Image (cartoon, rainbow, N blue to C red; front, side, top):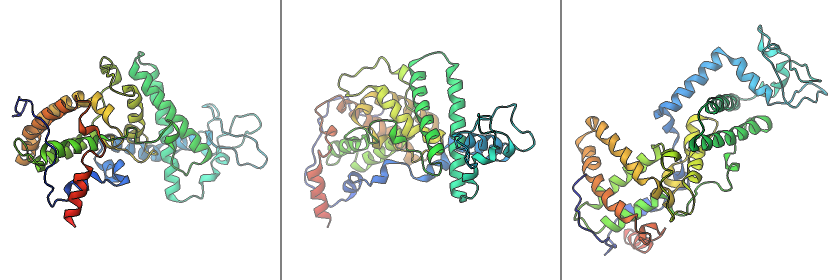
Length: 361
């Protein structure tokens, strides 16, 4: 796998700093780097499919969307105490869904009385509500499908994630439908979930191994591979917990399931539920534990993808992905097994970065 030397190689710390801003730029990220820019949606097939389904439903079956809103909204008729509409198939008006009667005791008012709060809103607010209720219906349908599947660790985890997100969306549409759902309430803490990110770990590794030593790879080549790994990891779908159950690391502070649930909520659910935003980058909100759990699985799948896809690549891309990346990964896999490696330290190269910054002025 590549042309890496089989002999053990000790990492070299940075020697004399030279005039170069690249490391400083890589290390000092902006808070918005935690999540994808909006253009990811145009290139995500799953996102595009769900968006097209939502648009089709708005055209062909607006009644089901409005009914979902009504089922989570109080009746606005004067003196009515109905807190949420209830509509049955038998009571559904086949001529005009807006006149379907709420079947709750003491209400019996038309569906339109439960959705008056969205009649005069802006188009932006209206679309936000539509996304929200479409997501509620979608997740509800997904939970029904999941319930019919055999029990497994993965099923239970995904069900718990879907149920948690579903609860947040339902509360949002009931109490503040024009506001983005706050999924940060699902877990104790919002992202990031580890003190040092995978992004920082790989940058540390590149600096320590390749910055002042070009025996195997130049620093520029190493950075190109690093950036490719960032993108690949951020778009990679994590290995299911039941497939990784035999991998137990006493060095990790949390279980793989702990991180998998957070990955589902912050990295996967925005693809499925479009009312949830933004979509976070896994390489930015996870770190040492996740890298130890996933590196072998991630790289194995990445290799398969590279060899299947390289026929469409130019020479430059083939060189970095098929030649340089295996060399890079050979050293990385050796280094990440060392618990005392400086790659795990947030500011292991900070002094050298400061020197570079000073010389660059």
